[in-house]
Image (cartoon, rainbow, N blue to C red):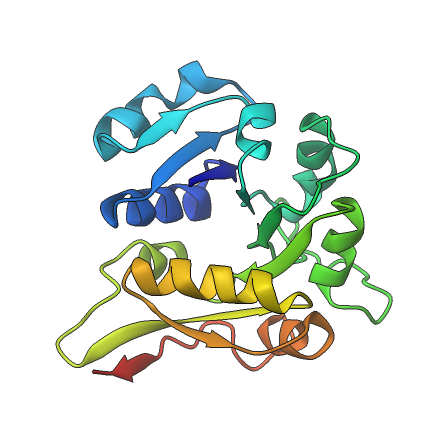
Length: 201
């Protein structure tokens, strides 16, 4: 199994490094092309490959790790109009540079809006509640494992990402469907973002 990451900023890089350290095969991409990621690939070592956005989007599991304002362009760059059952992990939050103004979501969760951008995908919200330096750190401490929240409307996709999270050393907490769980994870507004919790061993 390969994991494609679209976006090589702080979150995309932290996830790539942590997943590679756990033995996963990761393909990472950005809008500027694979050549610009040579330094990241070299530092991460075997297991991380720089590819195009289209190549990253062709994997069984695809991570969207781009700023909210660039999300539509990033999805358009995949060339996909049908995601054909792929599991898509949404790490985004509905705000960002330069003004960090919160997007008007019309009462929906951000992931419900992202789901509309990737028709045919099984969307899972995850990895959006922790800052990059915490996400990229060791998921284990002396007293337990770092908690990663997830939510999604497809139970099979949730289970698959739960297993991925656990393999990487974190502790997964499934919050259920996007309308409820996604709202708990939402930043800003939800109660869970920025909480750095440990599940005791």
